[in-house]
Image (cartoon, rainbow, N blue to C red):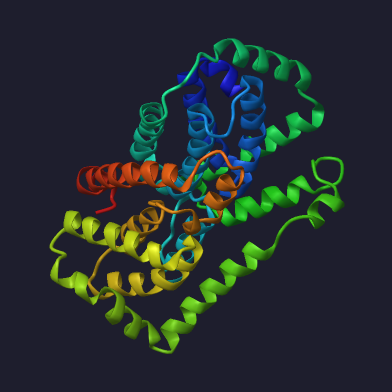
Length: 355
């Protein structure tokens, strides 16, 4: 529906995929799951266009739907890395982290990122031909095949809408985003009123739940054994000489996180090993650990190589873009996102109490 309403030209289709990426992030807190959903539509489009994997249109569509998934789940507490960072900071600093506040803090960056992703893809991968006729027919036929909304689909949409509404208003009721998410999941499995069956619940992958719990426990172990102090000195002591204000900290943290991510590879590995000592460093220097951790988490969105994220690996596995395409696109996005973050930290965050 979103893609059909944004338009049928190449430019409008790319914009539609960026918008879909952000909207899906709100209700599907998994980059890999978002890519699987979007790829289903993208593959149908590409086949309707009669395009080969090496074409600019196919490369742009798959590269953008893949890279956007790794960006938006840092601007919303949705991806596993952002969820992990929130949990570690809340446990160690005893600070309430609101879903709505995180969304508000990155909202200007989200808007700019949507526009930049769209225009950058158009600039790097210009269309070889006009695809408006084929895309118009594809959208019309696809919507006809979907038919009217079923009762189950309406119930699922209402449940997801209520969940997101509760997340966005947690500043009023102060319910934990985790409690809201678990409650929505349990409600979805209730007989007669829910939308899931017992067999559906059995298919859920509980591995990420235990992984995040283990990472939180590791942070407690590091604190209680004083190993945190050693890690802090070894990893972040050099930053003391360059940090003089919010802006200098943003520069040091973003590029240190970027370099660390190149070595750590997985975003989960990066966050689970570095966020506890980072929070300890912030507390030692009397800094607010929340914006410190948010900058560090956002630095994990800057990626140049496929190995840095399972989400990128999944998007790359479809075979529509190359490592070189990802490096070019990622290098531009890394620089642009840093500039946007720098402006946010310097001018916008102090206005909303994140100095």
